[in-house]
Image (cartoon, rainbow, N blue to C red; front, side):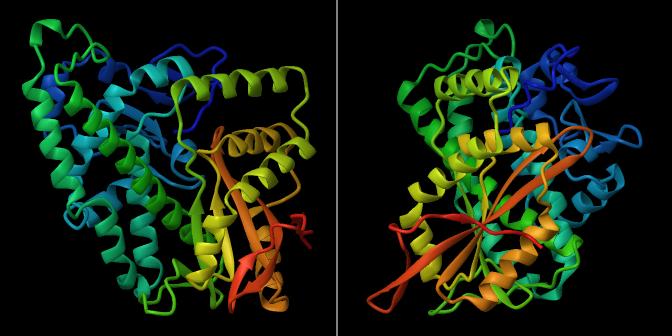
Length: 389
């Protein structure tokens, strides 16, 4: 979930505005009967509200702000119609809708975006990547396994059991659903967390591949083999996408956001602070980066949006405008990967939105060492920012 509490002046839950522009409006969802919502199939497909907004599950969302800078309602509708059976979207939506309802307190108090937005991004980028290159056929099975096979049935089963434990008289609004079976609730929470992370990871891969394609880079997919497992190739160089999914407690998110807001208000959110936080996150993930290298990666693209470093990183670039663009970061990473076998380019990205959806990026250089014929991150050498031409 993305936090947006620096946008909200003049906004009042359940509507998020930026000036006169509505980013999202959850009014009908908040006021709806949750039994009716979860049993209805008529609201689970998006419809066009106006030239900037779609209506989806009794919510309205601004496509250019929340999906991509040039995404239109027509794009979402076309994508949905094309892939809805392939990804079993009518069943998936029910689970995303349930999660959004359970997490409304986070949207209300911390201004975290509703989970429903994630499935719209997933559909948009899946459809775009599928149309980008015929080699995407090699990715379809992986996406389906990450979202559907086994996981979908398990979550639906847990949801049915939870529904059986609900007492209608005790439900006064969407946030006061009382669960009677604590063990079942705990199991459902674990499945829900794992589900969200899987969806986030898949969407990150599709997002980066899609934005690369929109920026004119050559993106292709190859089948997995015993020697490699690339997420995709960019200009023939193997890429692994890694999401820094830091385990999140509501209390830790709230504390982090209070600190971030105070830094903004006191003008302390400097470039050096943001960059050093990112370097610290990269160092903390060295073992996981070694795993990506073992899969054959020559470039690693990181989605840090759900990590604390990513929240500060995005905020800095919103404040300053930043000098790095996605396109320049990619070119610098490709140049380093092609010219220096002893270094690993890590393209750190974090997303955010105002009137349009942004992907902020800075490339970093991590030195490598060889241990037992395997490339590994050298923990002893400093991480450097790659200067972009």
